[in-house]
Image 1 (tube, rainbow, N blue to C red):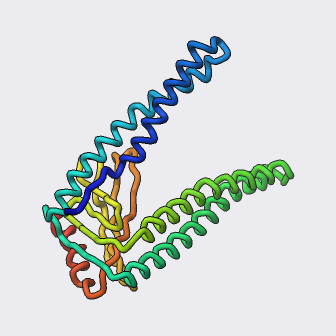
Image 2 (cartoon, rainbow, N blue to C red):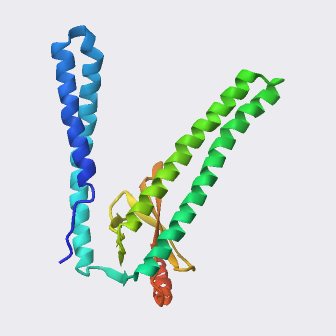
Image 3 (tube, one colour):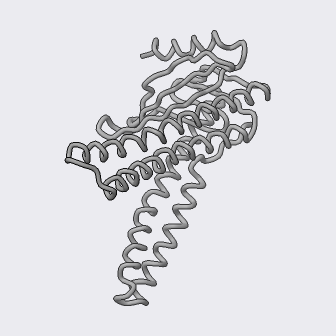
Length: 246
């Protein structure tokens, strides 16, 4: 029987620890440090309040996902189940890392160029250049590159580490999927599967675009699932089945 773990357990535990630490800091600051500790105490209590709300939310969300995973592994609404040989999984891992690093470089360049050129353009239309404004333009560009490029880099490294943890299996259902020890679901009110596409390659990939949140405040996650050799036709039928169902 495949063991199912709470995917949010570690995050919930960390936030629970921060809740306790925040409470301790709040009590020490407000009760024992008087006026000098007022700000530290308030920050501690605010941290405890925020983390205390998020931690159980993550935990119970993970419990719900555990039930979905268990049902998927048991075959409920299971559409495909793929396994891979080590060579296939290694090629997939290398391909995704190369792709992720290329995207990271692109994001870094654009994140630097856009704010830098905007500030420099403002100088031109303002009637001239100054060393101070040029320095500010460079600082804005560097900040954007570090923020967005750094985020893309960390996401690429995290995905690569998960892929290198071992040869994965793929379970794809009507409203969720599991691959390489990662679980994604679009069941529920605030999630939707927006697009599914088959991408030929070595190995081929099925890309899922999942939207989370509402139309006014949403985020998108791209999940790229490898296709074993010889299963390309099944993968294309899988993609078509989602559009037929909608």
